[in-house]
Image (cartoon, rainbow, N blue to C red; front, top):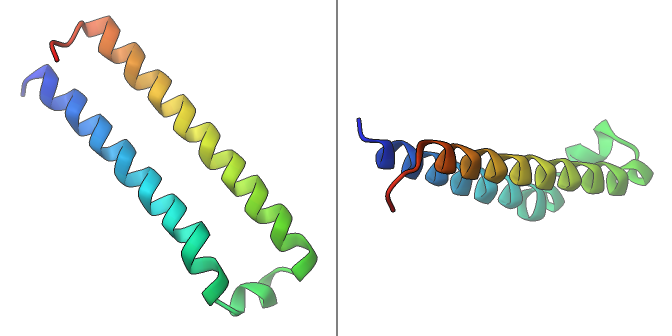
Length: 77
């Protein structure tokens, strides 16, 4: 397997993860009333904000790791 294929796979995995994450939290959450039974309505805003913050943190760490690997192994683009 070539190094560029590995880098492309990492980027594709990152983009798919980001898309699925934001789709779940921004579009599916309002349509599931059972979520309000699991958590009090007051805490839903905190849960959404914390999860979005955690998701953005994971995304930033992921891209820093990909760029580090990309520079370390000197992939040809």
